Image 1 (spheres, one colour):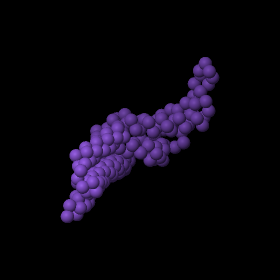
Image 2 (cartoon, rainbow, N blue to C red):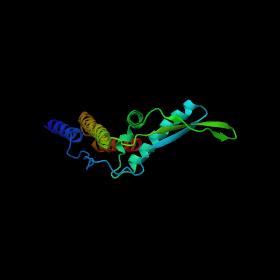
Image 3 (cartoon, helix red, strand yellow):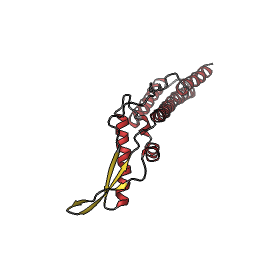
Image 4 (cartoon, one colour):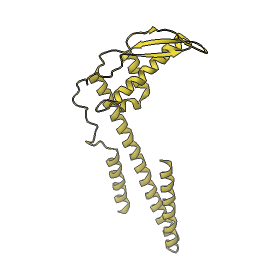
Length: 199
């Protein structure tokens, strides 16, 4: 009977921790584009060659657009936790054309090439909001699954320790119950400390 209750408790705990809840990220409303004050219209990149300068300008576009999105109210930050997807979107949808070379910058070590990279003036704000919300849902789901895994590991450790304690106590006919209890508690404490240090 006890085993049945423990099994049902384990299944219930796992379902509770891994299941969906209504605490999903809510949409940033309204979906209307904010005033584009401060929206970057172009960025510049520098390098020893035109190719390096152009690559640096594209990297700068990703940084500048990301900083602008973080400054909005509410900020669009979750999307940028997936840097590869965010960078691909900026390069594909927000960079306006191939750009053009600028004026060389003269330094003591030699000339440095400049590349001017325009950015589109009218970004698709609703699409960016949707992409941010999708990334936020993925992040929340990942966090929930991680904690569900932790909960299952803790429950497994408790059940295994309890089962081991009962089996050994039965085998020794209760002669070392006190010491077995201390050993089980110590084992669980050490496992808890190790888990806290690993998180």
